[in-house]
Length: 393
Image 1: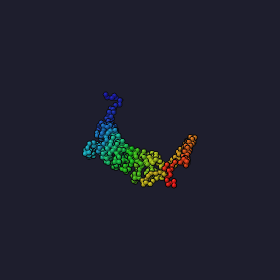
Image 2: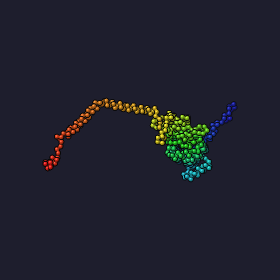
Image 3: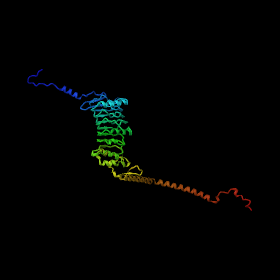
């Protein structure tokens, strides 16, 4: 119907067109995988948590995915090029898949964050993350890793954050050597998480990463840091070294901790949890804050040639001696009180003992007198009383 004269012309509604444009912008380039939940937006987020039935990374992840999270699956083994189609069963097929993925390009060129926690991952093969050139954050925490390929992270040139918290406790020394080799090529790494792995030493490659900003080593079995490790944390040309998180480690506060204590006094800001560092031994310093110790009071004994840890006697040792003396005095006082309260019984017991001894001595004396009387001497034998014929002459 034509508008009347003098009335403004009504514009056609544009809401359906706006909805179509928004839907087109938010629609992913590929359908969401069956096992996952996809959340649209400027950076597509996928979360896959399907339990034990998910045994390999989904192959139909949209190529414009930016964040991928797989939690609670049963991946067990991450094979070579696992996120670029490398899911073959045999070694030869895996090598062919990895070579093909490297030659034909990548399937997830925009993926920047990959989280694989609580997936029962036990083995990560060489090149497991090939085909992810834009990945900057990788989280493998809370997985029972037993084997890690020395080239597991070779295809991650832009990786900046690597989390391996509670993931290395079952692999033994061989896994630590493999981790050292796997960390070496990560020149852009900024954050490294190694908390909760029962580590007795830090991987040398982690200390030599040129751009590392923070190393999380809490809840491990570190007795301290040696001079070589502390020197590796210092950068050339005045560059700032990485921050360390060392809380909840069983530090041996003796001779071996002197380099760490001196380093902390000069670079306390490098260890944000320095005030939480406490001694696990020796017994005299148990649970003492590390920063409260004086370096001059810690000395090394060399009587056995092994540098046994000792600490100079101080007020704490003197106080222990005073307390021990007070305990002995109290015990002596109690003993005297018991003697005083039982003095009558003790006197009666002593009198009875004295009478018993006197009776015993009188018995011995009587027998001695009887034996000494010649009239009570025993008679001689008959043969000795009979005189010989010669004696009568």
